[in-house]
Structures are given as C-alpha cells and as structure tokens.
Figure 1 (cartoon, rainbow, N blue to C red):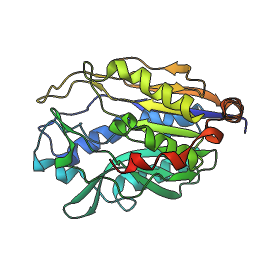
Figure 2 (figure 1 turned 90 degrees about the vertical axis):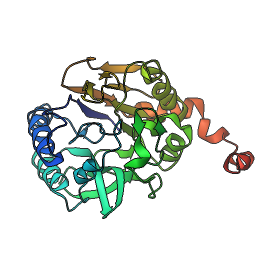
Figure 3 (figure 1 turned 60 degrees about the horizontal axis):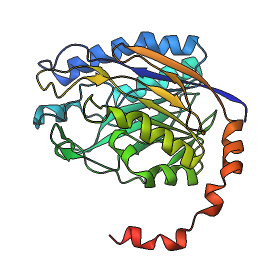
Length: 287
C-alpha cells in the first residue's frame, strides 16, 4: 500500500451567532480556504474538515433559525466548492455539512469527494445524542445510509461523526466493509469528553487495525458557552499510537504520513477479524 499523507483542519467560529447562517457560512468558508490551499501545497492526499464545518455548533440551542444552515448534498454551494478544490489539489476532501434532504428532514452529514473532484457519496451520522447542551435530535434525523466505505484515489476511506465514536459497532462495520483509514470530525468540549478523546479512538484503531484521524473545533461559542472546544486533532495508527497532534486552542492544519503497510501488518499480527464470533452476537441486536 505504501504511504499516505493525511490532513485535518480544526478551527474556531468566525463571525458570531447573531449573524444569519448564510453569513456565518461565508466567514467559515473564507477562513478555511487558506488552510485548504496550504494542505494542497503540502501534498495532503486526504483532507478532513470538522463537524458541520460551515457553522457554529448550534445544538446547545433549540432554535429553528439554524435549519436555514442546511444545504443540499451534492447540489449545494459548499459541496460544489469542495469539488473544485479537490480537483485543483488532487486531494480527497471530507466535508461535514448540515444536510437538507427534503424540507424539514435534516441530517448531520459528510460529503466525500475524490481527488479528481468527483462526488463519491456521503455518510450520515447514525447516533444522535440528546443530553444537556447537545440537543441534536432537534436538528438531525438519525442516518439511514449505513456504514459506507469509499474507494478513493488513495485509500479505502470510512467516516464516523463525533458522538458515533462512542459506539464500537460502527467502527467495526467500517473496518469489515474495507476501511483502512477512518476520519471522525467532531465538536466536543472540555470537561465532558476530553479524557475520552485520546482513549476511545486509539482503542478503536487497535481493535480494527486501521488509521483514524480525529478532528475537533476550537474556542468557545457564545451565547451558549457550553464549554471550550479543545481542538487536539490527531492521527492514530493501527497500534494505537498517536503519531501527530494539534494544539488545544489554535486554527490549524495538522498533517501526518501514514504507512498503510502497517494496516496489513497489524491485522495479520492480531487476527481479530479471524477470531470474531459473529454467530454469538445475536443477543446484542435484541436488547
């Protein structure tokens, strides 16, 4: 398989939440463009942006104003722009966007665009939280596309989104579907999940013999102020070792070289897929 260069972009909110979703989208896209250009110049082959990258993390509210942030995928303006940038830089781009399926039906989605600019498909977040400060069921319908794996120009790529990462079943489904590299764009705050941030995803990388790229936003977002988004984007290898890590408080492009020969090496060493006992797992789907 050889080497693959990955990139993750973490960013704080640009503009403020008193603006319209369209205005915020313009600010956020404009702020991302130099870092996407930087990724292209650095030779990044697979780039992932943060969860709902064009907007604040609006789920501490239950304000229907934010429905206007949703756009069509792939026909909306953000996906179209990302297709142009992917083709320009010969770079796969994972663009997490608030998706409108039909009026009143909205998903937390990531568009996957190949290095020639072709739209490959999308992943819709399957697990939707509803806890204090994270009222996502008000905004997002649970995903209905399963756990697709995308054959990109450079690797077999899976996507999991934020809260999904707490559920080991989806990691395993992506790996069994062929994923060698899985990205997890997130929005999560200090005090709630920070100690889990570098626990769960390295464990998932080990259990599934794959690389994982985890990306979180940075800063605080008034007026909700549910906590500080702590950044700390990182890459973890199939042995569970973090090979690159971003700052806790700065807009940043993080890159890493991933040796995909290690995927085969680790899977052959541990043989977790061989030793699975799916015939004993039926009760797990009955509870």
